[in-house]
Length: 249
Length: 113
Ligand code: FES
Image 1 (cartoon, rainbow over the protein chains, first blue to last red):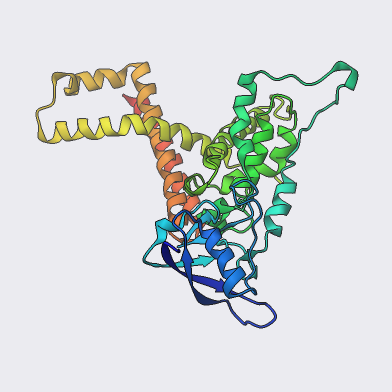
Image 2 (image 1 turned 180 degrees about the vertical axis):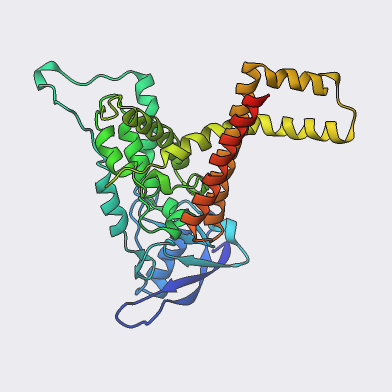
């Protein structure tokens, strides 16, 4: 009762056996409403159980199924098979990352960069619990809410031409997360984060190609975050060099 | 990690980019009109001369010329890097150098008017 047939050309790589990655083609009978992840699951369940890939939620929430589908970084659980009928679809692990095995990428680089930008609320002084919670108006929440929607799928790193050129670049998702906390009215950590984000490897390696925002499945718009950070970093830089207390939060 | 000094040129780039987005098309139009059409009286030599002789006029011309140069230098630098040219320092020095010289020359000649 399959409605359509999909040819999947999946990148395979077993570090213990293969010198280099190779492609293996699978013919998958799909149902009309399937997403690419369903087709890959079909391969795993019925054709070739040795295939490795990451997924969990099947609903664009966990961010683990980011991969190159027909050359574009996408969530496999959000890309419908009906958009790929009558052609061979290449499935590869995310570009710009080393391959661990098959469709699984090594994400350590991103994890380390994320840690460097301190993606958590920083207070000069915590107020005691007895003084109650930190309150926020809807307008204050709106300033950063969009940037909280990132699911760390890393499609933006796979799309970013600057990250491809300069592996040291902290990159879209991690910098956007820094911006998310900088914009939070409860946070006072911008000066600390700028040690990383305002360095060469921070926002200044961004050339505003906008590729990150185009591929982002959650419409986080990392490019806007980075451009806003450039403006803030520039103002902070001038203030600091004019001796006007650039070290403030 | 050391903070980058890029804000120095990026500030000029951003200001120049915003400005040229509005001003450059007008300048191109005005130039073409002066070259091929028949320019309105407002663009007569005397009027332009009077504009450039006025201190506010001087300031406006200086800002437009100088910021356009900084914008172009930085845009060219990132574009060439994107196209695969790796002589970034040389390109930066040459581009920003031309902008700096242009800025000084613009100021010098405007003051003469
Ligand atoms: S499986 Fe969770 S985002 Fe695709």
